Length: 316
Ligand SMILES: [Zn+2]
Image: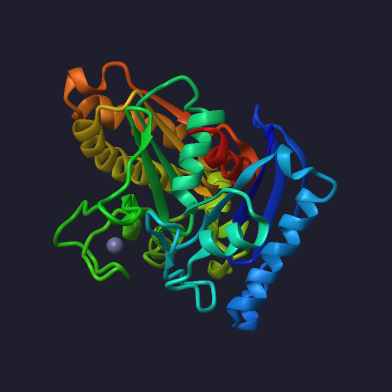
């Protein structure tokens, strides 16, 4: 029972690996999800292929279980409700399906909850008891560990950090609410800040870096401009950091975490983003609740999804 399969189900790729108890990957694979074929069965078959690659040659008594991170809301019985980028991924008893098929324990979690747990067991959260993990990308995701337990809602995985309101009169978010943090610091909204400023006539290196093709602006380009001393790029990252810092201040005041762990593509903006978030939390959060707080980059790297899947099995 010293090995587990970790599977990270993405909209484009399935990543899976065989992982040992120390969180080290023994072997891994990446195959297309094939969601564009529009059929649940096709995606399930792809998942089976990935799992079978991992367990080939492994005696059943050595396999501790299969841990799966999936997009969507997952209830406590491992049933998935609604994932926007996967076909018919609703009301789907994922845990049951794979337990019957492979006759081992299966645990299914929302993908960001899974990453949070992986960071807690093997990554930047190792050794603490209370932490918040956020992932910054197209959207803003997150998970919370309190007293060594993943925080869940009454029935469903509940930690939708991206939809915390930071401006109740703010712009409409695609969740239906107004002024959610994601509406300010999601990937496209970061890019939109640069595009708007350029259209208003602001001089910036960002414009030169994309040869005037505004549709090619990415957060990475904005970071590149910042590192070359661009003022607009600096202003954008400070603003994004201040939004995040304000939102996280509320979470610090509510949960008093020891660590906040930040991952996802946007976190590559690095020092300026982390420094700003830390400054804002120091300025705004209640002193006692934030005095021992550490803000750290995520520690698991590109295979985080696989390692986290295994953490769902080993890290109970
Ligand atoms: Zn929202």
